[in-house]
Image (cartoon, helix red, strand yellow):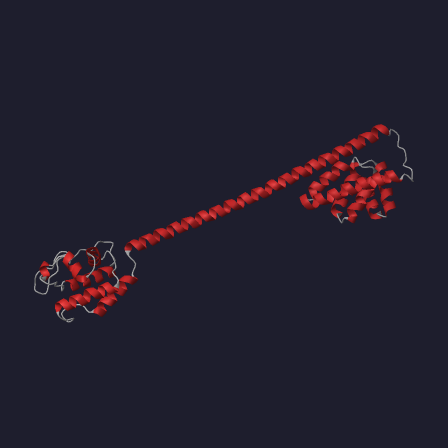
Length: 300
């Protein structure tokens, strides 16, 4: 690019600088105006077409690199520096009217250049936006993984609780089976329990209440199927009075669904003699409806 001074001669090469493709339009417009302004610089003992960039920078009281960057659009100078260039050029030219651009025009060009974004900045912002989206995606994936880990931990705790419940069921079943084996080996003939044997009655009540409480807790913690499994395993080992007490306690705990299932299972699976003894014990407890339901289960 070639510029011409007012006397018709070509401007020095350091004034007519070419612009890189990365320089945005607003900054190019300001740099072109500054190039025109610098064409009017005339330091003492020199002519315009012979002035060097170093001499012009000294004349403008700025560094040579700052002058070069301002004229090439590589940097946006502060407006105080632009105003200094303009006033020095006007002083060298002898009048503001001689310089082809006004200070207000330079002010407008400077504001527009400051307001626009350079091409590199636009590219960098696009890259930042892309990286931000990737980061948000990774954060979403991490949140999903944390949720999965929390769910797995919950499942692990539930499995540990189920193992503990199964171990408890096995211990209860083993104890009941041992009691059943002892009863079978020590009492070959049915011997009616004496009405005044309060110790045995208390034992019946204690074991029945324990099983009823454990069944109720299992139903609330693990569901009705787990509780019913415990009750199925205990019906054969319980005596008819214990079974009656178990049903009474279940009703007191408001575990009615478990009680109904136990009545059906006991009436269906046990001998008529055990069912009759259990219904008699239920009558003694005042649970006449459960007694009738057990008889119907045994008959049908």
